[in-house]
Image 1 (cartoon, rainbow, N blue to C red):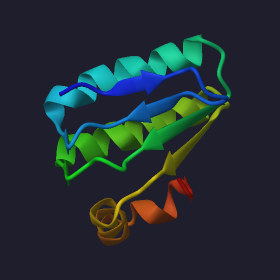
Image 2 (cartoon, rainbow, N blue to C red):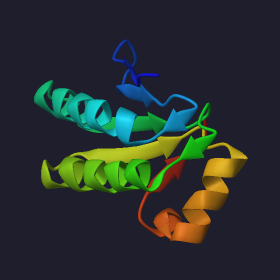
Image 3 (cartoon, rainbow, N blue to C red):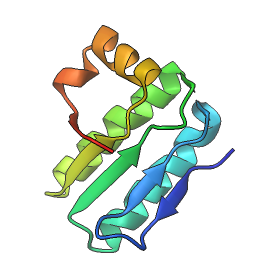
Length: 102
């Protein structure tokens, strides 16, 4: 399953599939690069549908955060479901990523 990028909103929203793993990570990184190249200042990552994030998926999120930050832009996590929230708390990513309500 692929990530979906919705740029028909004020901010581009990257919607993750149910499983975010190494198969999705490469496409996700390309999506982030396209969003930055498109001149958007803010990126929203929608985790509402995610049921599983692998270590490759977590690494891809951290790399996306670094890429966006290095470009002088902002990245926010939105629509975080309970499973994703717990994973972020256990890994400490909740201290790195800013979250916004859905």
